[in-house]
Length: 489
Image (cartoon, rainbow, N blue to C red; front, side):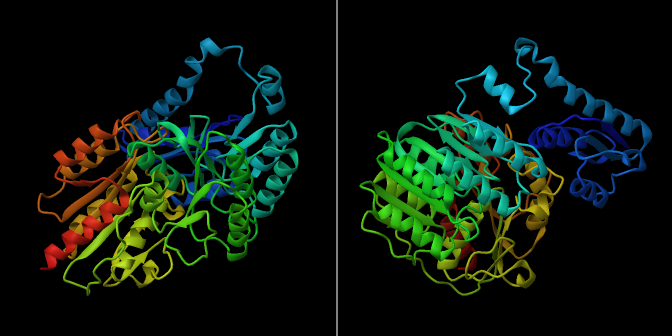
């Protein structure tokens, strides 16, 4: 069953939440709510939920598509989707006068605004972001599927205008203590973050906050900023901004290993700063650091370095294959990469769908420990991200627990604004419906006590379900190693 809403744009995150709520209704087999772009129509067609009813839908139309076991269930699903879509409108009565149709009209209504959050389909995102930049606004672009040439043009224009262009595909930022996107409620302080990774920013900021420090600002750049095609334009601007910010004492830069020439350009700029830096190119400690910068192989090490706390030794015993394997299922792509760093250093043969250097792809996973990034496009096309809807992990979780070779299962649990209200509760409830005989499970919880989900409450829920909880993602990977060695002893 399909239903089209003409000229009705909705934020993709909101649509994913609605689709997830409809999908759990009795009799609903699959559900998707997407703007009817050609790419989204292909996603719905692949999920076998697209019907002839939507033939005339265009990119600016909302498409509600579901598959049900019978007509009554389908009608009930459509009715619930309509209710959830219309619900926000009923809650906007206090803001009835706030109805700008363009960025320019919004600036007219709020002349003091300094930032625009862009979350429209990628085909429209560049034009909207350029309008904002020309109006003197910094931009945080949540949208993805933006051509890399457009990204460079936007960032070049932003630099010329003296504003900041964060993204495309920028999911996390904290500016002046205000969390944006998937961010956490952290303590204000004097440590600034620059990150090409959303969950990398989240893990470092939470470890800093929980360790007694605080964050001045966290600037997201988008995942492609340090690639050769973009040249680190936002990273360089962010370094300039935090270097000039009197409230920032120490600056942490987090990303996957960058293009070498782009890295050199950024490190040369860092060398001209009087401030101390920590550089975390996940798993890559080969770059020569300037005198005012330290290299950190993991997010945990980066946070501890910024706090001035001793970093645990990275020396680990290198083991043979053993009788069992570690399976890792991650909502955070950078957390998956960090776990690979820890296990790679132990000499374990690893495979991942988001492999770092020295790790093979899933095509060669036979006999290896496997770490999966469930936020990858292969898992999230037309579906919510696992941080929004933890049920995305359910099938992979059941499969790993049923694997007789799986000795230790490694999970992450990411809290904060935008994330699921009770990810630990979902994991615990799902485990309750599975056989009691299962591998040892280790988890980390990225979050703080001030987060809506409250970190200590999430930890207690996981521990009550028989899950060992480590204080950081890297520590969880180390604990998984210890448990594996015990199982192989």
